[in-house]
Image (cartoon, rainbow, N blue to C red):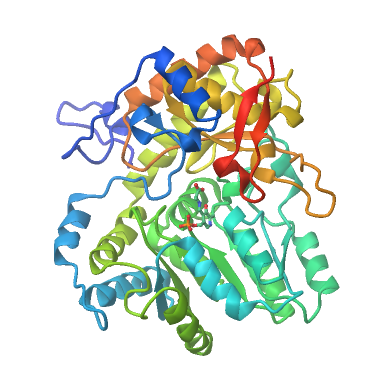
Length: 471
Ligand code: F0G
């Protein structure tokens, strides 16, 4: 939000700085079931919050994906939705908005981000090829591996130090990138930059790093794409933190970022603030032409691709609302940033600087007495539910799975618990409540117990595993 101007009384109206740039039109009831009930539900559901009923959650911080509140203009768009199978007016409006904001000429709709990954990778990756990038998101990596490709992580080392200050912890290590391109000459499918980088804490990539990556990639004659799920937040961080961008508009920064790459894969459930939807946007007509038959087969005809006409209307409008600077300042600084800094003030270890869409608790420092083999992030996740009906999400040993060759648990460097903030949903009071609950848990952290498997599914175990406490 713009710095408050002097009001009619001649004083700075500070209150405005923290006030959301929207007001509430519709509300949804939430309730905190009694603690005894919460303990019972958690036990019945094998200490896995994915198994809980949403009505038993008070504050749901599982994800920012598809959980945002749509605006009056988006809902008005829903009424305008043209549900024609082919040639929908809503598709045209969505395509125009994407072209306008990103500058990419070709747009293929898909049902969500992983739909884009599936269609794109089927064409772009030949068995044995590599996809270097910055800490690919799990579905992104899984899709690359599904077509027998390999993701190479080139994220900078500063990322692993959760306390180290670096304004762009999502950056690629350019030496590492160049090395991977050199070692895999003629065997690189494409390079992918994830903006912001979810896996390492919603951390941004600087414009300088994007431009240098583009230069290197060009030298090797390789194509460069964005995983743009949170492109708007990345642009906001550039404006806030990178020299020379303070006077530029969000539109200009987004365009400058997009000008560096050949296209983007988009889960619109994040920065386009819709409940479902996504797209692939490209500069090159030839790739588009080759993707079309795969997209039709996997997602649906090229003017809907797994979306309803009404979803496409909401997405078109959401693209503009997602890059509104006043909204971004409120969401990134006054909600996510506020929550993170308040927890930090209480001495609670969180990844700093605070990311764009979530606060990540550094669980290795929170639960010193629980080894990674006993799933400390999952144990903390359960404790937040018991203490305050809050649902967070484990991003640690449980999510990391097992090494396919040895069958051993993979113990990730970062053992995290993510508190993900849905867009335009919760108030400052809700966030203050979250701070109070976590502070309470922090005070009795030594009494928290580790977990062991009761049931471990063979793949994607975090969704369905069940546990018992190690007494
Ligand atoms: N890329 C990134 C960076 C993501 O964070 C996600 C999803 C996807 C791709 C896949 O998109 O869900 O629409 O299929 N992230 C969600 C999350 C699930 O909770 O972080 P999708």
